[in-house]
Length: 236
Image 1: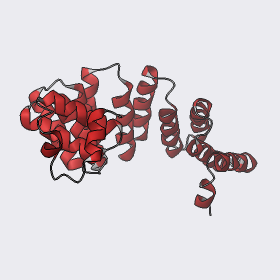
Image 2: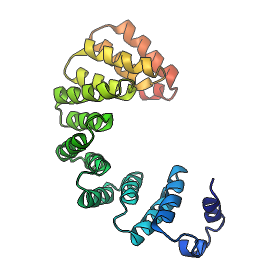
Image 3: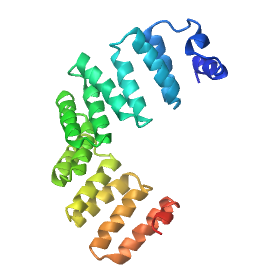
Image 4: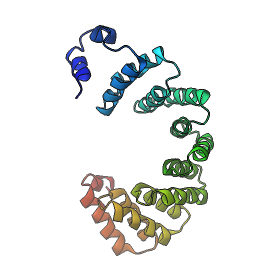
């Protein structure tokens, strides 16, 4: 842990950040750098304070706005996050993380159609990035546009094939379309990449159950329990 963070934690009783540092941090970059260290140590409230100080000095500091937006997300303050990402886009319309962050904030706010549009913009800027394709699929699935969601997941997997999470949610959309056999194949891919992923075992069991392959389904439920002992309580 850095000297600055140790100093901060040793003097929490002091009323303001300014009193703690007494001019040790001068530039916006100084405040941003320490804020990022707090973020990396999951000290999110402190990180927000430092990012905001950086932005007081330099209102168009894009990295600080991006990090502040994602940090607000840890407190479920997605409206505040959206403000940050919109400010980024207002400064630089072609900023990938501005559009991607906007999509994330909108999705968490339940504004899925708008989220898809934001992800589309992010994809135009960085077409080779898997993340906006993945979360675009999540937003489409929330709109019950499962075939479109699967197409988006497929695009994500073309860019990052070893993403167990995308294989899993792809399987869920296939299952929602009644394509249980295809869903099982997708769950198998997720499990091959992360064998202790109990959610994939659970979903695979459900798809097997839908196919009336009950003995196999029970074995998968048992695998899910072995992966996560708390899972057994969810079945009760």
